[in-house]
Length: 234
Image (cartoon, rainbow, N blue to C red; front, side, top):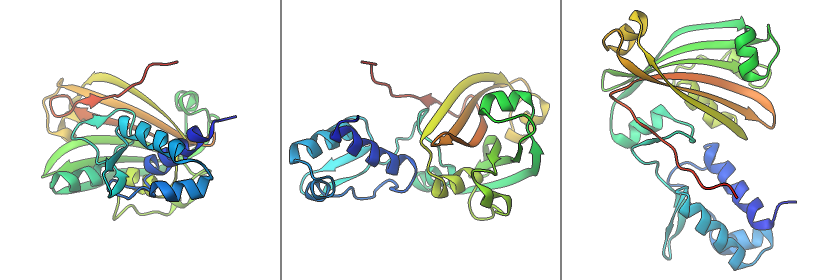
């Protein structure tokens, strides 16, 4: 059984990582958390101190705590929101859905996602552009059994990743980072030289054991760096 301080921390982290509490959102005051969880001020203070040390919240004397603004570097273990990052950086952002279809997954995708071969999923290819410069090419699968409303979503206002962050909380995520050299098609999409080095971030998320989505996002290698923050395992 989890200790109370761990349960409170998990609850707050879940709200932050799902996007329910976006950057700048005020965390409940200590007395509010004490009342909600029936715990001592020491327990609440321990939770908030840990969250602050991990960079998830910013504590302000007398003003309380707020969800921290992400740094300019992309943290590998966080879920990226292109639209929010562009707004924070003051850049003009747009996206274009290059391809959309509902397809049965093959054996390789089934192994990655834990789903059965032939399961039909929504397949999307998206180009992310900031200040008229392509920043990333995204290939995504969405499990329609978990997110059925994605079937009819036009994705006119928000790119698929942002739309999912705002609507589907996730409980588990897996990230894999690898390097590739751009082929001709990818080079044209990202406006880089054929053979140029690229970073590929593969991300899969689940909600209470149910697969939600897989995204394979390719970045020009000279425009991005991926940063992870880790703690030692007890």
